[in-house]
Length: 86
Image 1 (cartoon, rainbow, N blue to C red):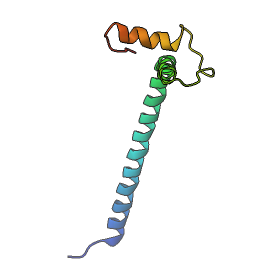
Image 2 (image 1 turned 120 degrees about the vertical axis):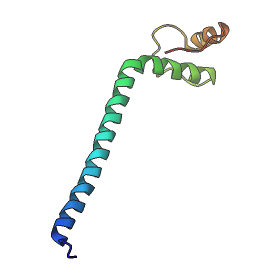
Image 3 (image 1 turned 60 degrees about the horizontal axis):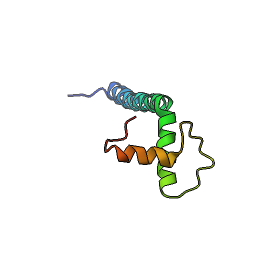
Image 4 (image 1 turned 180 degrees about the vertical axis):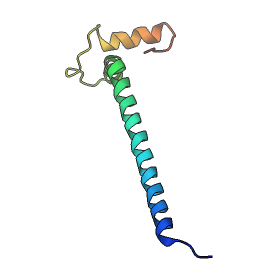
C-alpha cells in the first residue's frame, strides 16, 4: 500500500489551522462576555470593592461612590442578614 504523502501533509496542516482558529474564537467570545459583564455591573462592582476597602480601613478618597458611605452600605448589608446582591 502506497500512501500519498502530499495529500496526508495537506490534511494534517489544515486540521492544525482549524484547531488554532477554534481557540481564537473561544478567546474572543470570552473577552466579549467579560466586557459585557463589566459594562453592566461595573458601577456595582466598584461600590462593592469600595465597601471592602473601607471596612479594612483603607483610603477610599480615589473611589467615587454615588449612593452614600461605603462603610454604611456594608453595615446595612450585614444588618439585614441577607446576601449582597448585584
